[in-house]
Amino acid sequence: MSLKKEAISGSEVDEKLAALITNSNAIRAIASAVEGTLGPKGLDTMLVDKFGEVVITNDGVTILTMMEANHPAARMLINIAKAQQEEIGDGTTTATVMAGALVGAGVEQVARGVPVARVIEGLRVGLKKALETMARQARPVNDLTDQVVRQVALVAGREHEDIADLVVKAAALIGEEKLKDPFFKFSDTVIAEEGAENQVFMGVIINKERMNRQMPKELKQVKVLVIDDALEPEEIDDEALGTEAGFSRYLQLQTEYKENIEKIAGLDVGLVLVDRGASEVAEEIFTDKGIVVVQRVASKELRKVSELTGARMIKRTGLKKPAAELEKYFGYADKVYSDEKLEQVWVMGGKGKPMATVLVGAATAEVVGERERIAKDAASSVQVAIKGGVVPGGGSMELAVAREVEKVREGIRGMAAYGVDCVVEALKRPMAQIVANAGFNPLEKLGDVIAAQVETGKNSLAVDCDSGQVTDMFVLGVVDPANVKTYALKAAGEVAEAILRIDTIIKKREERELQVTDEAR
Image (spheres, rainbow, N blue to C red):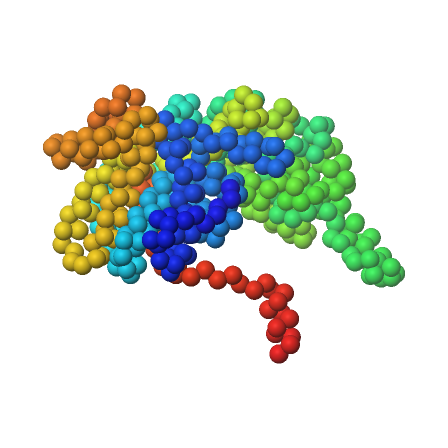
C-alpha cells in the first residue's frame, strides 16, 4: 500500500501542522485497511504480491505485516500491532482501529487550535481512567471447565466450532498451571496440515521425516536421545589435514566417532533427534539396529521433545562420555510414529512435562494458513482469559468505559478536556465499526445501546449483529479476554501520543554520505 501526504481542510491548515497531518493520514490509511474485518460480520482482505501469490484473511496482524507500507508513521503502527500479537496473541485489529480514531480525533482538535501539549495531557488522563475502569470490570475464569472458556475460543476462533472444541480440549490436557506460566505460549502448540484429521494429543509433531524408510515406522516405550549439534565426526581444517599429524588426528576422530555411534546403538535407544546433519556411518549403524533418526530438526521442536520426554540435550563432544553417564541424558516416550503421508514424526506421551499438540486439518493448501491463524488466535485468547479474566465483547465494555471517561471530563479545566474527548471517541469506535460491518447505522445503534446501558445499569449490553437488537453479550456468549482489551487500549494510546508529538519530519542523510563527511574531517 502506498501512503502519500493528503491535504485536509486546505489552506485553513497552518503549514506548521504539515508533519502531523501527513502522519495522521498514514495512520488512518492503515486503520482503514483492517477496520472492515472487525466483528462477526467483518469481511476478508485479499493480499496479492508481485508474483501473483494470494493470501485471503481477516486476521488483522497478518494484513498489517503482509501489506506494503513505507511511511514511517505507518510502520510505527504496524510495529505496535506486532508487539500486541507477540505479547497477547490477539486484539491487533481493535488496537489499530482505536489508534486510528485517537490520532484522527487528536489532529482535529489541534487543527481547531487546541495545543498539542493539552491534547496529550487529556489523552493521558482519559486513558488512565479507561484502563482503571476496564481492570475493575474483568470477571475471573473459575477453571478450565467453565463454559466461558469455550465461548472465548469460539469468538476468537471466528465461530469455527471444531477449532474451539480442539483448543478447549488441549487447554484441559495442558492444565491451568502450565497455561499461567509466563514462558509458555499456548499458540505454539497449534499446527495446521492439509489432509490431516482434527485432533489433540499429548505429544510433539516433528516436521521432518526419518532418514530413510528402512527405519521403523512405529515404536513403543522408546528411549530418546536429543543431540543439539551435528551427528558427524569432529572436523579438522584443510591446512591441518595436509600434515601427517593432522591426517593421523583425522583417522583417530573417525574411529572415536564410530565407537560412539556403536556405543549409543548398544544402549537400547529408539529415537535420535539431531539439530543438524547425520553422517552415513550413523545412518547405516542405526538403521541396522532399528533406531529412528531424524536430522535437521528445528530448535523449537528439539526443546519441545526434550520437555515432553525429560531428555537432556547433548552436544556431539558429549557422546564420548561413558555409557552410564549417557543414560542420564535419555528421555522416554510412550510412542514414536512416522506419518509418511504428512511427512512427519510424532512423539507421543513421555515422562517429562505435559505437552499437547493441536492438529488442525484443512481440506486444501489454500486454507491451511488461515485455519492455523484462526486456531492460534483462539489458543492465545483462552490463555489470556485464564490469566486475566474476561469482559463482555461486541464493543460493549469500551462503550461503558467511554461513559465513565466522560464523567472525568466534567472535572477538568482548560483545553485538556478536549484530549479526554479523543479517548471517548476512540472507545466508541470498535462498536461503531462492528455495527457498520454488520450493515446497521452506527449512530442509531450506539444511541440505543448507551440508553439501554444507562437505563438497566448493565455494561454488557451491545448490538446483536444478526438481529440488530440490543442484547446482553454475556447471555449471547460474546466474551473477550480482559487483557486483550487493556493491552489494545494501551498500545493505541502509546502510538497516538507518539504521532501527536512529532512536529517536524527531516530526511536523514544516507549512511554513505555520513562516512564521507567523517573521513573528510
